[in-house]
Length: 56
Ligand code: FES
Image (cartoon, rainbow, N blue to C red; front, side, top):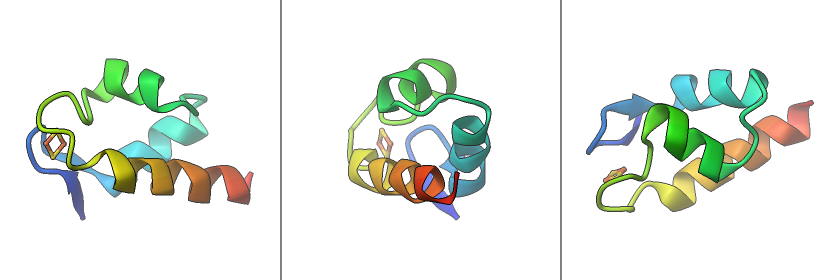
């Protein structure tokens, strides 16, 4: 599903980036540009990061 509508970023893209070592929001913003526009997706992105880190 789309998490960031402004940049067209899906939850799967975010999960894969976290699994690849981008475990901080700042890193995801730099690489995927998630949250780089309106910012409405930041909270959900943080929840996905936390969920992925729990699985590790
Ligand atoms: Fe992600 Fe707007 S929805 S920056």
